[in-house]
Image (cartoon, rainbow, N blue to C red; front, side):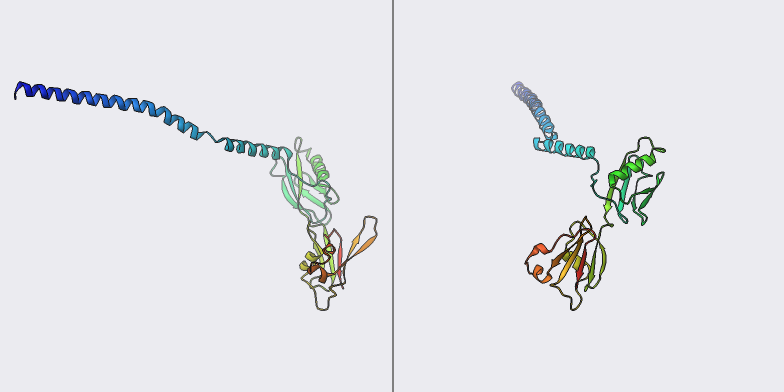
Amino acid sequence: MSMRALQLLSSDETMTITTRKMCQRVAIVAVCILIPGWLAAQTDAAKPADGAKSTGQTFSGAANNGASQGAPHDNTYVIGVDDVLAINVWKEPDVSRTVPVRSDGKISLPLAGEVQASGETPKQLETALAVKLQSFISEPEVTVIVTEVRSQKFNILGMVLKPGSYPLTNSSTVLDAIAIAGGFRDFAKQKSIYVLRQNADGSQVRLPFNYKDVIKGKDLAQNVKLQPRDTIVVP
């Protein structure tokens, strides 16, 4: 091989090596530029959006508010026989339980024994139970919630398929009562139904109910919301 050929070959190899080094340097520079941007993008993706962050704070605040307020119950409600009570003693699961009010108006709870419940409000019963438990538990915190109202009832008599006494819900109306009692028997005087309601002073009022009119959408005010001890008479 001639000297000229050797010189050309050596020159080509040198250029190849130089080109490779330049490519490597360019690649390194590109990586150095891209990596910070990629890391920043990953950091931004890990951060919650402003809306999500705000929502999370709202949920957390709502949860804290709920916890601080405790379990809600109606302190004006008077507990009666057959009502079902959920009784919770804080940090005492062996004492906490759900119990019905017996026919004698009392409930039984571990450590507390028998306690009068009928005639008391949930708040009053909480206080009575706490006093009973003080001998066994330091500063007992008691919560009483009426989970099922069974003591408040209405009566329906006369020409219905199933006359009797039924539990009263918050939304029961005269139409509901007729449906619960199975509807009318033959020859029931559907235009002459009435509700007997006892007032606080002991007097009694008679509320007329014309079934035929009500189901036609007439005088819907007759379909009154029932109250405890109301008696519906279907002649």
